[in-house]
Image (cartoon, rainbow, N blue to C red; front, side, top):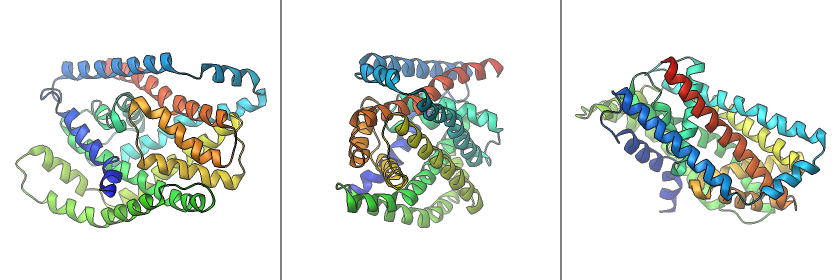
Length: 339
């Protein structure tokens, strides 16, 4: 049961939610007015939730005091974190374009438009499950929803592999020297993920050769079966590049917030933090609280600056979630005008 929860939170729940969202309106895939209404409602929901978070944010005093007390030279760390955000999106867009190249080839610019708008859908849905449906609304062929969602989940699995590769050694070092973490759960999840990587392609190929009455299922399994080893290797490469950017952003924002660690402590704490978050996905209402709790446990083992850790989590959330969401809503409006 524990294994099922670990994997399903990241893949199965996302897929079922995405499939439900893709079938909310049967005409949505072929009728542009319905699609525009859906995108407008999604954007309104995202801004409504953002207003709620801003109104209920409890640490404005901490935020203001830190900006008033920090040295001007320390702002370089904040600038680095902000500048790296578009690079973060660039690598995710390159991965998205690689995944969809067999069903809808696109330019990198167009892929970035879709990824940015994905943040609008992810912002207001459990486990960020609205990410891929939101991206799919900007595809030229809306009948490709199921295939795009399935391919997106392949990208999610690739990122999980990268997080495990970097995170397992770090979490072992952390657990041996600091507080207890769910090491058993991570190791079991690693074994399950390896088994999925080995046996899932064979299962997908068998399913692709079945005579499906439902056209969506046929398209889905065919598109998944068309992913070859070289293509998946590129997806892993783009995932690794994005993961490195995450690490650089985390290091920079921690330094800006006065949480100073040694290079080895950074190499242990940051991969451990991202690995724990990968297997403990959060709901929108509790996102910051849960991320902050884990950050206190992990980074707090190396630093007593609890206020700085809490502030760093909030600022990374603003830079890597709020800013792309705002850009995504603008990008969608521009995209619709030019279409």
